Length: 602
Image 1 (tube, rainbow, N blue to C red):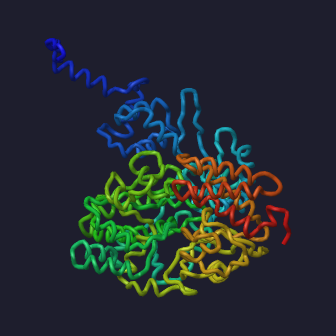
Image 2 (image 1 turned 90 degrees about the horizontal axis):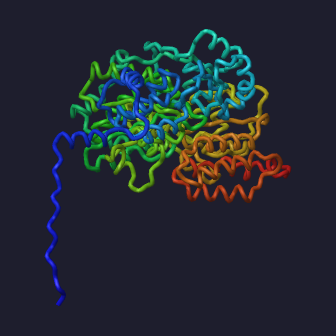
Image 3 (image 1 turned 45 degrees about the horizontal axis):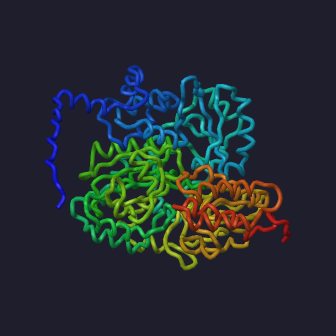
């Protein structure tokens, strides 16, 4: 038996006084490292107000500072971190992630004016690179001229954005005039427009460059034409929610942001989840070649909002967050006004609706990256499962929808599902809004039957090919949808019809190339875009897109074997659709245009 000794007497620990505990908590709550100065803190508070500030408002606050001071000064970021009780690292990692924020350090001189010239495929085909080369010398050192990814105005190519004002069919003279006149804000649209595409379908919505700020259907006019009657009936129980849901399912409407998931099925899945449930609406529309959502929003915002209200009531949504890409300054003003009018004179009880502003990141078109951005974080995709229908925005079940999907809800329910699925060609059903740009006489948004072919779309809705141009190739689904030759111009354009050819329709962004263009150059333009827009979270995408773009840019023949190896890794191992789809145009060139990259003549 072991000998034992008595336990030592515990040492008395003095209890801290209440004042000492409070002081300790105050010290822990202070930022470590650089502390905010009083002037910077006052400047920040003058713009964002006094707290408390919700964590998810970080990006909104960064926009306010960026707009007011032509950039994000480090001293303001320190003050913002203090006001929001965040670490400087949390604020800086978000501020440095998005393209439209510029972090400025002491001694930096912000540009008096920034001119962005779109270098997307359609604008490049229209001469954007020559414009980029000319402008710096013409505009002088006080104006910063930079290339920008697709700004969503491909039918107006080439496009320059002076401050926040777009210049369509831009040349050096028109951009110089805009700068000299100080025309740096988007024109304000009138609310006396008339627009009802469902009554005219199928039809061409736009026919090329039109008014930068077209008139839209205002609140009073929309209500006078029966607007919001459906939403009020559903909310007040006069219209059966289950019947509305069945109409959506019977219509065959699929998500029109690119993924194509059946809308009615998505409503039913989210409705079965535990409450509270949220909704996130995706109007980021960053896919190069896509501008349909902007076109509808600029002309008919309340039809979209009514679809939103119907979906919210049927699914049981408590709060809605609308995420709008930052490039759409005119559309944002319209949507802000429409929401203000709706809330001032609601036709029925409304859920909480909040408009959030993107900050220039294509990746935020991916649903989970968009949710991260709404929460005030870097827009990086989440690993799945869980899917956002189960664990989404703020950890709650979330119904995510594209703008155009909600836009058609009112017409489908009121006209009946047979109206919508009664359209179609070549064995397909429904309507598709095609964003058409490139070498056609009348680019623009075309509301056409699902399953229409490229040849039919160009000849019937676009006035044919542009004078002097012969069809050579086309991208059926924007930069990520791949590239096809003219020999496949009779393939039906719809969900699931293009996969056998190595492509997909996605958001139905159709870019038409002629014999004057190079499929090789088009694929390189797309790969450079993906390399620029990769969030960098996963190695296959971050490294693969950069390496592929470098290989594709080399003169001479492409190293097909190495490019295919990169394509396999990106497709199989990337976290989200950006890296998975990035190889599509490159693979299309290797398959359909080998004479451009291998020295093989056809």
